[in-house]
Image (cartoon, rainbow, N blue to C red; front, top):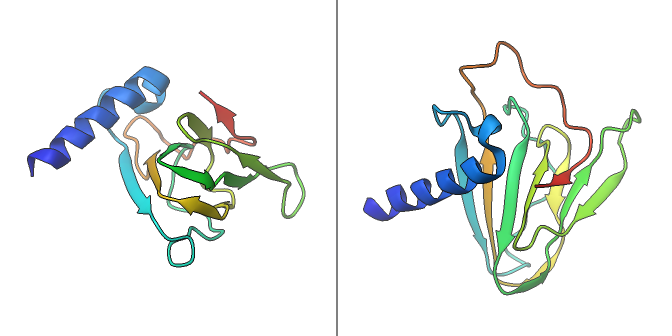
Amino acid sequence: PQWAKDVHNLCDKIIQIVASDWAGQHQDWAISINILTDALKHYCKKHTDSADVDCQYAMSLGNFSGGELRAWADDGTAEGQPIDVANKNTIVCFDGRLPHMVQPFNGQRFSIIWYKSYDRRQTAKAPVLKTPRFV
């Protein structure tokens, strides 16, 4: 439908502004758009995105409190140190191949995640991004 094309085009414009080298010209990325409205029913538990070939970009929007991105840094230990990142109304780059989750929240939380499971320019997976960073 047209609305889906419009959303994709808007997301393409955003990622081209914040990470044009990562995005590339062929749009070898995907987006996940999530709406979480009930913290008891909707949550994002600790997981990894092992099919990713590079880092992810994520932004959360909405009328909510809490809901920080918790990402475990690659600090050389077995588990790593968790880092809570308040990415409400801003974009953060982190590596989904490392453990991450969304902290509990109250309200209505929307998220947009740009990720890659393929990039025609790569011959191997990108090195792991050890620590999240704002863009």
